[in-house]
Length: 114
Image (cartoon, rainbow, N blue to C red):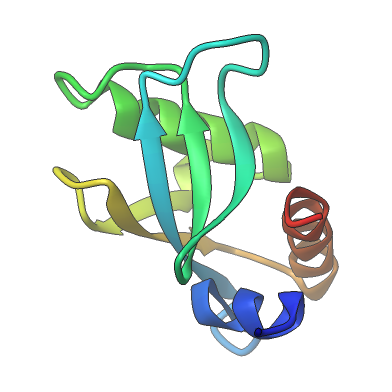
């Protein structure tokens, strides 16, 4: 079984020279319950993200970008959906990431993997 850091390497890539992070995520739109939107561990080799918004009219994608921005302390304008606009598996890029912000994002993700 792979360790948490090995699993993280599969979905999390930090390019410190380009100052960006690329994340592979698997979203679960229409998530209900007390938690609503949340990082919720792994789904295969992707970070699983529960999104309260439905998968209609791009609402889940918009909510995903907003949720990640709030969770990581990043402006939504710095988050881009690169691939997967119509599917559950998506590739997200976060731009203008300092090393300190990258460490913060990694810590937030690590907490969700416990």
